[in-house]
Length: 443
Image 1: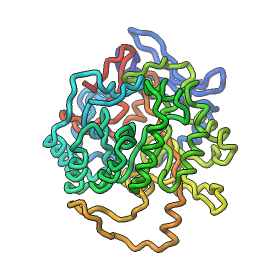
Image 2: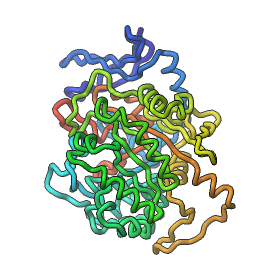
Image 3: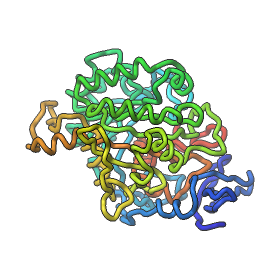
Image 4: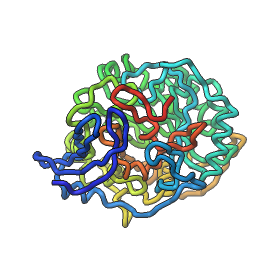
């Protein structure tokens, strides 16, 4: 049964084509589309019935137009920048500081380390900071790559961003340098880093050998230890692949809870089949319902499906989220979601930006002055301080590939890649590749 229509792309040629949302014979939800040149494609998008799919789709209808957006040209997704057809101004901005990397992961969306080594010049980073402030900033800044810690001037890049007025900096990293250099986390904290978004795929080396090309568990644990000593907030980021580490979801969560309050949460990312992905896209990729079932089953019901909601700022089918309070006996209490939103925290980009900054930052509640010195900005009483240290955020993001790309979802995207020529480009558009690995935007 066809119950919805949208636009998507052909996975072979990336041509925009009509797409239908249907209920399949198995009761699940599919995207069906046909390219005149390359035939019919069907992609599973929801493991559950139509009622559960529609119920999850409750979303804030708020529109936050991008600041100083350009007029659309060829149309979505071909000329992102952002244009006036986009419905969100953005929340999190990825600055890819380098294409160099000290790993060669088989599942890297950025295909890091394949081309001539290149570091984004400091003056171009400054120009991008200025561009963001002129187009709706401050945003939360995700320092990414490649592997950003291969740059020795990373602390200088963070300090420069603080001077420009940005208040939250997240480091997307594999953690190898953080593990190897015991004092490096403290150096980054002193520069103004808030959070380490740590690639953390499992609790056995076999998982890392498959997804990252080598055994890494010892280094991951050392990185957590060093960040904790420095007072940096830590978010564990597992890429979850069917048959590789989907059986370790509960183990990852138990480890994260055992390292509170240093570990502020876990952010699951079911594997995305774009970029340099050496895994074949299965007929049944991980969907939101399947991910939530894995969480519930592997935590013995301590975390339940009904605790979660979809995004309120982004499209709800892009993400899931729940927040918990740890009781004195170690049990978890789910926190109520915000009234009027399917999300636990946010209905707009600014809401989301502030929630992430508050939840994912380290224990210290003070902010950094532009010169790197710390200044007291609030006098929270002990009750509120202890409450914050006992909250835990569990979330996930399901990025789109050419098989399941939904342009209605894309137009609400608030996670953007900074491009020197185009400006802010939605993450799933920037990293979109066809079946031969050719990218729409990424050079």
